Length: 151
Image (cartoon, rainbow, N blue to C red):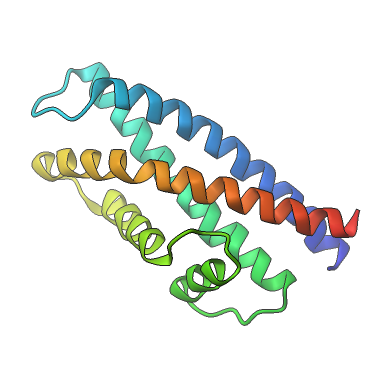
C-alpha cells in the first residue's frame, strides 16, 4: 500500500467512525419516536437528521471506504454493485442484497419530496439503519487490519 493510500484510509476510517457515531445517536432518538402517521415539527427534524446521516454514512462506506479498499487490494474499479459484492466476498458486509437496498434507499432519500412518501422513507430508514451500522462497524474493523499491516 502506498503511503498516500495509507494516510487516506486512516482519514476515511475516522470519517466513517464519526458518521457512524452520529448515525447511532439519531437512530436511537428516532426509535424512541417510532413510526407514526403524523409527526411534530421536532420529530420531523429528528427523522430528517436520521435520513441525512443515513445517506451520508452509506456514501462514505460505499463510495469512499469500499472504493479505497478496492484500490489498496488491487481490485478493478467497477460499479457500486461490484464494490458491494466484493465487500461481501471479503466478509465485510453480512449480505450484499441488504446493502444494495440501503444504497437504493439512499437514492430515494436524495430524490423524494412528496410528504406521503417521506413518511414511508422514515419507516424504511428506521428498519435498515441497524444493518448499516453493523456493516460500518465490520468495515472499520477490516480497514483497521489493513492499516495495521502498514504501521
